[in-house]
Length: 446
Image 1 (tube, rainbow, N blue to C red):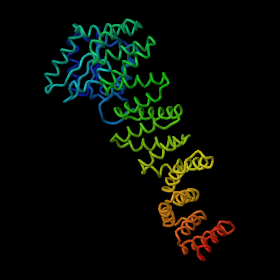
Image 2: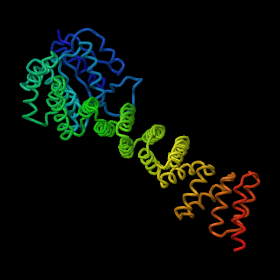
Image 3: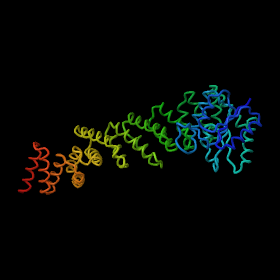
Image 4: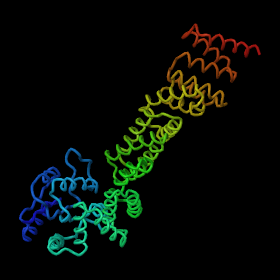
């Protein structure tokens, strides 16, 4: 009694597959037309002998859909892992993948890493496709030596004979390092035997030979996490996100960036994440950048973090309006650190400048920015901030005090007088106006 599952995109091809399988003594043939129906097949009884998968078939369930595009090997792996868990899929089950139009061997990597036994490249005519499907079905009864060997080694692995699986898959991989399927199972066998170092070496070799392998990167992320290497984790996660730009992988990478920040005391992981996002030409890449900036901004705990964060803000100035609270909190932290002597003046000036971009009249930021510009002989930058705040109709004693100080230094006595009088009206009892007025008199008399 043979059972088959066909996940085919085209209705006519589903009917053709049913006819072929029934002619080859398959008694149970399931041909779901939607992802929800495909997932419902998991709970049904009986092991499958054959799974035919058209790569155009959308395997993600309705609630998980991420939009148009070919399915990824990680999504397929999740699907088949559920089949294994429910004992519907065994080492003897054969996976046959039907490639899309114009798709050749160079596009087969996702299915090779999954462990597909047969790959059918779609011809131009339906007759040709039928012949290929019939050939694939016949191969179940008379499998090739390679297919026999792979099935036998998978049986060892599934039965828990990891030493036997390691020896067999290790030999296959040594003979052909390009064999991704053998390399992955060899690495998995080493992991099961506790040989993490050898598994990492093998997986890094696979990652170099097959940089598009999602599953290789996924396993490396897990292993480097267990080994306490968040720096290597984030590097692989960023690579995975670049290949598979989905919300799940973004959230994983974001969490790893913070893990690295906590462990190493710097925001390099966030920088790597932003570099990857900058290369993604996707509508939601900007949204992810903003979310990552806000997440990072809330967690800043060192001068190094602050420098990386402000550098990222400078690269993405369009994000500033949404970062107002982060910039305010950062400015307050940096000014406190500056008072204690561990935040350099340049960093304080940058923090104040970014805050003034979103709140032109922020009193404390304007005061600090002006003072630091005066000390650094960069009064022109301070003048621009004063003029912008006045153009935005901002008023505060701090604004008028900063304006008066700059005007006195540059010899603009009328401006200084106007600023002193305006400031005194807002805060008449502040001694600053008497001090500034005395400076004005000294300038005037001198």
